[in-house]
Image 1 (cartoon, rainbow, N blue to C red):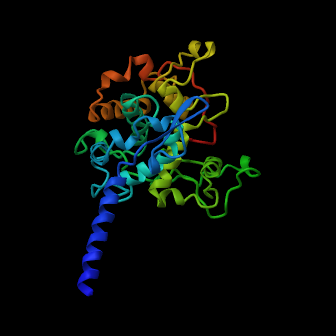
Image 2 (cartoon, rainbow, N blue to C red; image 1 turned 180 degrees about the horizontal axis):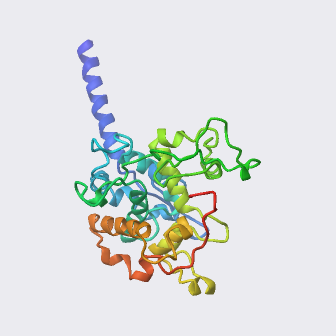
Image 3 (cartoon, rainbow, N blue to C red; image 1 turned 90 degrees about the horizontal axis):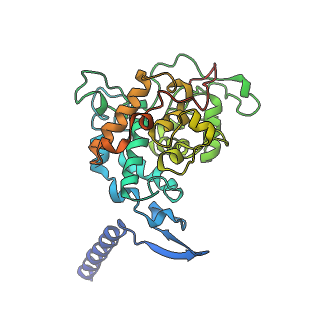
Length: 316
């Protein structure tokens, strides 16, 4: 009897392993809604979306590629060793793939958007410098928080909408670092996480940190403006005023959306060039090639009129 039970257990284990392996490539479910084809791809792209009919991020961007992009993040001298990983990224990305993150257009556009989004992330979390091992662009995701905050980043102007929690510090945290109480409050509302009272959650949970960054990428800073995602993938059509302000669809305008006059409209400054360099480096590493980045006026925001000016009290 015990022998039979042992054999049965082995058979069940084999079946479970087989199911697990099969589930790693979830079959695409397809139906038509109001004349449009929509799909569901299981855990990674769920909810009957037209974008889920395209390739998902894990189809073209896998663990080894993430490791290549962020090859020095777990070096002993890095400041967030063991924190960032591919699983956290792809889990966070799954929330936004049905909305078009990495699933707008074909494989080429998907890989370009990964290079663009992660180019911002790599630049903003890098501890690389000119003679660093592997070069200055290999050190993205070195940080998950601001190391020596100069202040608590509490702005009392927002005391009625996003009041600062006693004892909480709103210094930079995350993949696209969040600063100030009002930014933690707005991000927390969107993600349904109490970041206003617990900003430390961002430096404790890499999936949440990536999710906050992707939300920022996918969401306009102001309702009258485009998101970084939309200006990059071609969903945004510039107005006459945008054209006069030299704001064009492409990578350069993603910097304008996210940072405004902190990096844009000032010529080829170091802050802007670092972000651009990471984007180009990642395009090369993913085999897309930097020639896909476009001409200088599309790639940079050096001559663009900023969408927004940074508040005098805020750095983000």
